[in-house]
Image 1: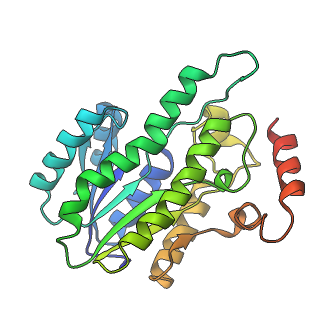
Image 2 (image 1 turned 120 degrees about the vertical axis):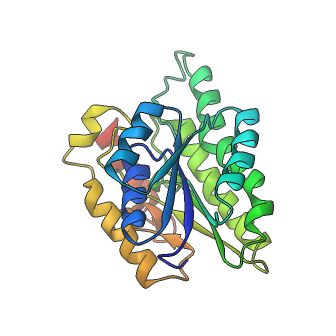
Length: 251
């Protein structure tokens, strides 16, 4: 992926990793369009970043995604990249049987949302000389957190889907890049996460991702150093140890 000169749509761009990537890519000379459900939050981000634009999107709503994609292409005919960043992460107590609603909401947001949006935008992206679909999985795609089983499962699915999509698009102008964050200081699990010293500072994560994108334009996966123990746990034979440590820390 070239680091500048793109028109990039970023879902969940109003906060956390989405906003950080939006601002980082905006500074590199890309046209950035952030999307999300909270208009006031989106407005605050665009006000702080002149030239950035926003669109409302309910990533859980199939009909809204279809309409949104049509509007995005009409408003931004040079759109050539999408970052499927929007996601939710909620603990589930499966034995207490309070998990089903959370599981269904998580699957709709984290898995069906990116699949639906990418599918809707793909006919347009395939017409571009160079285009990119970026997915955001997680270190938990490779070593799951037991407290958030459906979140971990959706991220594992996104990883697998990214590989399949990349293979199907290998002879086209569209490349597929997967970004797998570690535990980062955002509010994904609540305000406490944003100040948790065990989490990677958001600015550090963003800077490392931007550096990889800029210096390794052919990279299919963006794995920061902090995430490598999770990403390669199975390959290094350390899965059981890493799984136990992760779940002891966050149990």
